[in-house]
Image 1 (cartoon, rainbow, N blue to C red):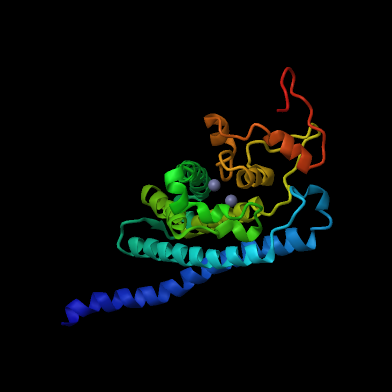
Image 2: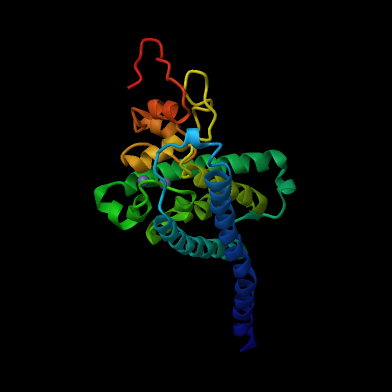
Length: 273
Ligand SMILES: [Zn+2]
Ligand SMILES: [Zn+2]
């Protein structure tokens, strides 16, 4: 009897030890990422950034409360996916590198960049699929109930969308040995870009000609336009998929220039439209 019960008892003990920590990590990430962005950008710096407010109106308290409640469900789903990663690592299905030094620091850098670039591709294509009329109502409607988003929108997903989003990390870890610190940096970056992308103020730097200084990154205006006019700007971190696939909003640069309060200079031989 003991031989049968021992592994089960060890598994239960592992889950009881690991899960509270994983849940806490996911919850704190959202509270610090979304809450910190809300307190800093939308509250403390709101006056100073008022000239960079993308839209005149603000999201209502009711909308933000709805987003917060939906995001708690996403936290729960992400934590269960996190637990499945821990269990897969325990079973030897996923290789988790004990310390970044084990594979060298160059691998740590590669690991983080590959996770981010891979996630951008995963997000772009699953996001485009979710905008197909048949899938939209099952996967993505809740996120777009926030026409004028707030930092709290960043985890406001239907349960099905949260699963699709959350599945990226275990799939990537199946293909690529990953250390806990690399996964931590990846998820912290994901949260930060996500919360800032929904904050409603254009915080990205602009060039003198009114275009983004870092044109390969999705600015706040980029994702804000996605919420205002779904059908364009599906990318999460980078603009390259939208540009490659012709899904960047044709008026993106005009909207960006307006958000940063600069006249948009015409490219040579082109138009701003
Ligand atoms: Zn969308
Ligand atoms: Zn969004």
